Image (tube, rainbow, N blue to C red; front, side):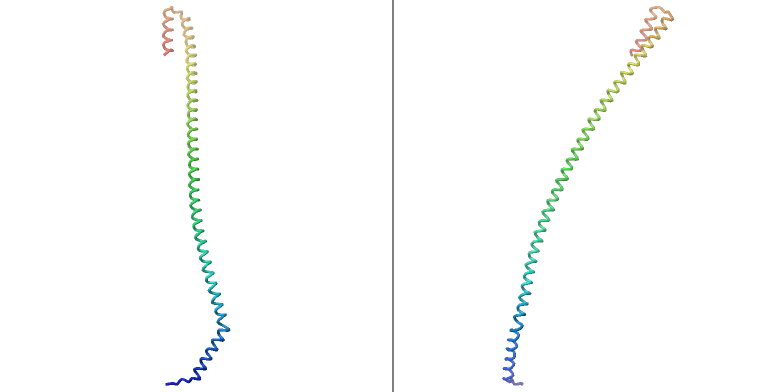
Length: 160
């Protein structure tokens, strides 16, 4: 087997301790500072991520509330406009009924006028015919009984 040489072991330990001291003095603090800085950055990013996540959650809640509010407002507006439309519909129907009644009344008045006009024309023609009959009666010089009979016949025909 191999023998351990104490001077090599001591020299290796001294070299190791020296190297460790040099590395600690020049590199360990810088490496530790870089590691600490990186750790702080990561922690800061985690905190920012949590804050952003919380903000996102709050914005989502706010958006949902606004959306719900907008839907409710839309329903109210729709209902209001529907009521306005129904009111206008009822008003138009009422006006149409009123206009129809007015038109019917005018038609009745016009019918009565035409009826009166027709009756007047009929009476006028009846009078004209009576005059004509009277002329014929006088011309024929019929007796009184015949005159009465003719007049009664004429009146009964015109009266019915």
